[in-house]
Length: 283
Image 1 (cartoon, rainbow, N blue to C red):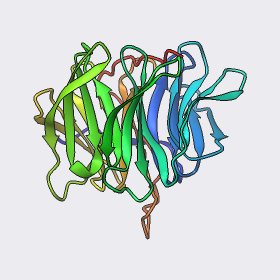
Image 2: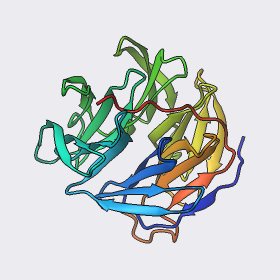
Image 3: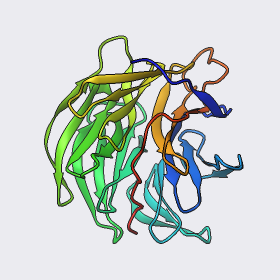
């Protein structure tokens, strides 16, 4: 159950590394440092890296179908065009609130989370954004909106509100998530669920904040595998690379009095499984 050794893909000191996403068109992994306000890219073939600074804290970055990126920022959702120009898709600043994790649904909509900086219960949301600027608040009573993902057939949506210690599952159809129920409950002492990804077999991989690991659960909620890591604050994971067989994992060092040397680095677990191709934002 425990296995497959990790490697350090990018040694870094990200305050709050998050959101690894494979951009198939460019052949690069995109990941972010939320509190460092940085967008990182990494080419696993050439080893080339880049860093771009954003004008405010950033919760997630995803590729757009027409090129460019969609950004889940502190004050709303914005679009970065291929020429580098920026514009707001939805501008909604709320004092004390910031963006967090986000994911693109099978229909190309962006499901974007928010949370309060103080992590107050009920201070966050999960909203569905479409390319024409339409916004629908799906959940309005969230503490720390985190991992979101879909089953291979698109009929299930998985979601994490970290303080609940649960991975929840919804039925999903026609852009709607209904019938929320628990899939997994993380036991005391094992950390808090954070970002997640779903593989081609329909299993859910969950990063564990304060758990120093990534876990794989079957669609029935059975623990199938544990990948230990050398840092406590493991934040998110995603399959990437040309064959979508390597699992990339982001980590954080924020709040650690004596962070381990590799805290904030980007890790990779080669040959961990087979990921799903992720849709781009339709906007």
